[in-house]
Length: 517
Image 1 (cartoon, one colour):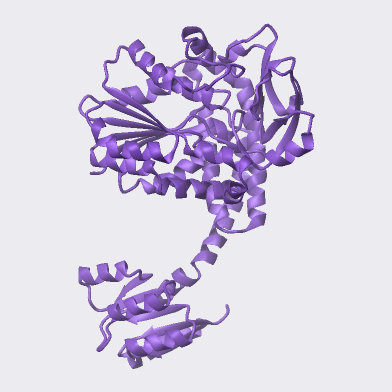
Image 2: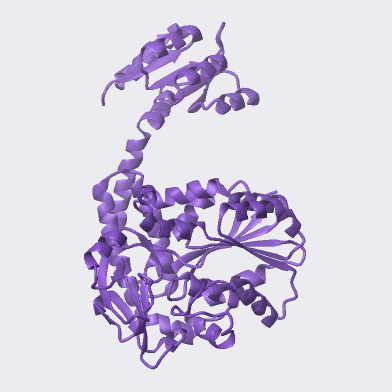
């Protein structure tokens, strides 16, 4: 290894010569001084990788030295070494952002372990991760051929999310390319699985996963309490991997009691999936039962304007006499208003909040160059989601809910997929505009890239005319018309879209949490 310079600061440094020789034999170059003031002067003149700092020194003590050192070199790792085991000393040192804390007497191996943890941690983790994934690669490849149930597919996708996070932290393009190849193969097989089973799920719910229109009845309503308020948060377009990221911001507020994966209805689009959540009905049933609220793709006007009404009718149908409210947050102002008034909802049994920001990010990526840069790939998309959530009114709402002893239910209506493969389609002027699914008459498409049906009612979808079709893009395909094909292929490639069939769009989170306070 290249020379690693260490500064050891101790007023009894002469007694540490055996330790210093041990470290130098391991390849470290150890510099020493016997007081804090000299240490600060050395740090200004020379670059060190680590400082070993005694806590109890005459003159400038360890904690005082640490404070000034962090002002000079905020990112320089410091290992505090002390005889003092008093709790307040440890707390002050940790609060000053030390990297490790050792109690005297220390043996050379303790120090070596601490140095390896600080200086070689990244490489050691990378080596282990690569080794583990290489071992797992064959298992994943074999298991793909045997996945036969909706639960197996959901668990498999969760496992792949884990490996994606592990591998992307390594910054090893070759390993990540292998992973992406496996994900592509997985989505190919998943699309076949959906083609073979989706219609049966709608006809035989006993053998089906929880679908959008069953979510409230199966997971939400049974968890409502007459003695404790419940906050239901529906974040539009939240993928399972994004939930894993933002969940880290809730650990101090809530304990996760249940974390499940459920399946979005097809099309995996807001007007279908989210209306289905609140109504407890398939799109076909909604169009027949509530034609005054349901709008088809070809109808004018907003398609999600009556979610509150759908929810009210659903609760009435279940004979539930609840005190409840519904809030749709579409911008920062609406979010802040709810933060201010949230305490007014403490006596409700159910408070529903629909938050649209994540969906706005995915749509803006197509339209705004800055969002294209900020959400260039899945990793960046997750990072942007985390940044938004940690600074959003939604987190403030959840914080208030925790303070008021609300149970928290968090879910989404569908996910989104990063599209890469343009797929040609031809339809008339009445054909819908979504890039991941199309509905219309006489559609001409590339059969290998779609799941198509001439009988929409079999899939719980309304039929608009005698020869009306639905087609859903599979894997990472997106639909384009022949006119200006190359222009739009470039415009929409590497954008986040939804409406079709992929693991990312269909397998989504439902989480039940209780407050820690």
